[in-house]
Image (cartoon, rainbow over all chains, first blue to last red; front, side):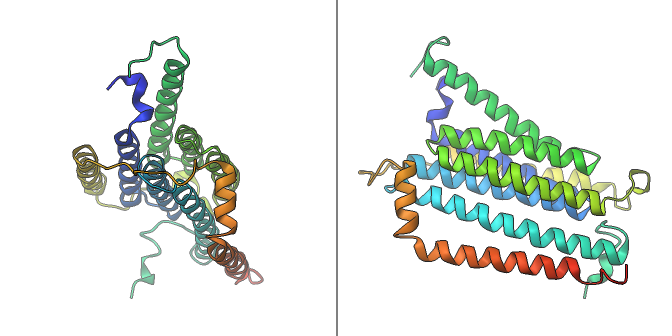
Length: 108
Length: 176
């Protein structure tokens, strides 16, 4: 496998998707603010989208399905970002902080 | 299989490597930057790289949508949230166990290693026939025929998300 020919192999894209997922998972565990965790969640969704698009290009019999699924992931991610950010702003208004340790009295 | 570096395929390979580098660097900035606004900038960089990867997967429409929705909309919304709710950097003292960073790195590393090993070990059978070429025209046709119901449902979800975020953001504003 030549290094200039990487874009024609399914494994390349699967490895990219795995790395995006891993980096996002690391950020989700390690970040201390709610906005940082939201950024990491977006990275996880990007990894999933790359996987869908890779299988769509190389394996799927109908190459429109993966593209449409990725478009729906984008729409849901945009809705999720809007809702999560308004929750973050509501939390900030009540607690004057977005640190996850400080708002832990929301636990049951 | 082995394109010379000056041919069109070789140059495309170099552009692909640059896109991989942009994606990885952006993702690392997004999770490791000290200030949140820099993390948002890293996220935008990462999404530019992902859009390039989509272009190499023969989906220019999805690449365009990635630029429009993620870089153009989601990152701007994140910047607004940082402006509205970012605490001062000098108040950001770590209240957490120092082990959290190392343990989460180990966990994420093991997960990534497992997924990469799975991806490299598995063999995937390619489809015998392809129903279409997956061009922008094909995407539009199946979006408005086969998936028209889901298309409408997503627009309802987006409407509910807009109203919900307005209600959540509005609550308690008058007393502030």
